[in-house]
Image (cartoon, rainbow, N blue to C red):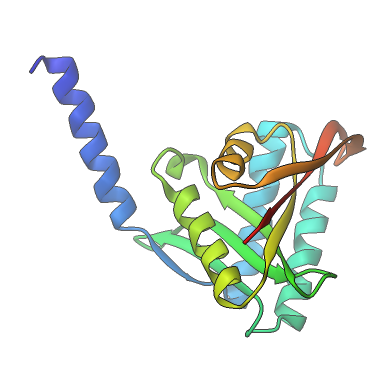
Length: 179
């Protein structure tokens, strides 16, 4: 085996060990500030979002902390060695048979390890176990990796609208899946 191939194999083995060390735990109120900051920093850096995005994330999380229904709703935080690496939430929607996926985030240092798949599978599994018949989500076209993951798991793009939001021009998307 040549040196380049051995190096690639070692990196893959290291990534597998790293993802195995990641735990998913339930979101707790003390995670709120971190999650708002993580979303705000990531999307300001990668998308140019202004502070109104942090306000939205904070409102979503505050509502979850104040009103979540533990039987039908859950949030998860991914951690490794005490460092938070991502999140995902399953919440009720206006349609009682449909769950809503929210606040899906994988920090840049954890991308490419399969954490996004693990978070998505956990959230979808929870929704199915609770008896939801489907799930919907709202995102932006610019989140290409997340959109590819949604499509790979069977979500279908049902709406796309150009908007100006969070200080930038975007294409908002709605994705849905039936279980």
